[in-house]
Image 1 (spheres, rainbow, N blue to C red):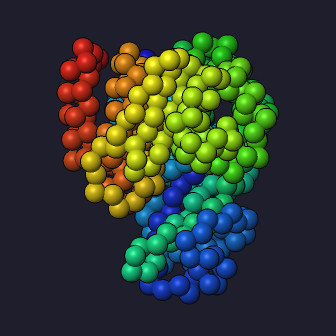
Image 2 (spheres, rainbow, N blue to C red; image 1 turned 60 degrees about the horizontal axis):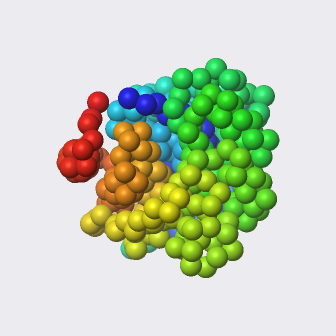
Length: 335
């Protein structure tokens, strides 16, 4: 089976259910917002959360994608940077228990974390993110040997603000003969790195994943289908996700609409990451473009039924059965 390497922010999600809004007010965190915090504030919030009882889950966009490809059975590897601390060890062990081969470099700073506060009757989520060690990944950390032997290389857009790092990564992946995929991650990342993104997509990237707002930021086109057409002019495969309205996929003159797979949605966190994993897994099996999108849709539908980014075993079993049937129906073979 073909293999995949990912690079991204090595973050641990720390999930806590709050009895009231006192902690949010103490740290000036508007309910429902996502705030970046410094190390001192991040450590204080984490210390305040521990007595409440917290759930730890390894996260980060590319890491979520690579964990899913590993569960699908693809040989999967991940490059990131962690601190020499409890959260760093947790991230490493979480990745490895799913079969991911990790290259986790060490930083003198604390490991990155995304503290997620669930509060109120509607379970509203507020985020305080400390990137920490993840920010210390630099071009000089990357070696050609990390990329050799991999068929795919997947990048999360959140890293693009470190342009030198991403340029070095795509150059090494290109030299190693990898199919390169990019998840644009966030419209504000696209807006602030527009010229750079256009350059690397044109020169290096084979598959682009974008949601509606990211596609608009990249192309300056409001209509997601027309934005898809524009993105596809710059890469081999373009994917534009339109949330509950499904997704569009295109290569050359071939274009397909992919409806959403039925789901009882409670939390959309991680849907894009898992969609990318399903799409890349199907692509690695040589599936037609439409089937790649459908398999992405199937697995995305499972993650939105759970809180957080980790799909439970019953849903994984159901997804694998649905995907197996789809692959066989399209003449594919499973390794």
